Amino acid sequence: MAEANEIGKKGEEIAYKYLESQGYDILETNWRLGHLEADIIAAKDGILVFAEVKTRRSDEYGAPEDFVDKRKQRAYVKIANNYILTNKRTDEARFDIIAIITDGQSFDIKHIPNAFTVVDALYR
Image (cartoon, rainbow, N blue to C red; front, side, top):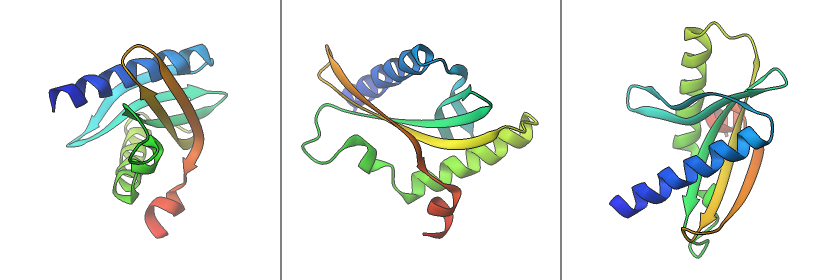
């Protein structure tokens, strides 16, 4: 399990640097609400972005983004609501996924803006 944690941390570092290079302002990393956690909260062009980072060594068992299930989506909606209320934010919000496949040396990154909506998470 420690190896999986290391890969996850490496993926979050890659995602953080990627978003910065794309002009996003990183507001929070690993922001917690009880046992729930948002990997990255960022802002760009007046939009508040809640990004889930999924990192895998391969896509043999499916693409990393396929592992952001309804439970995880509902958790992000809760986190976003709490973050927006706590910080009195008025920005539009969206939910992104950053999918990374890495062998530890090189990586492929896929940024999926607006990967799901509140309606998707709660009602579909």
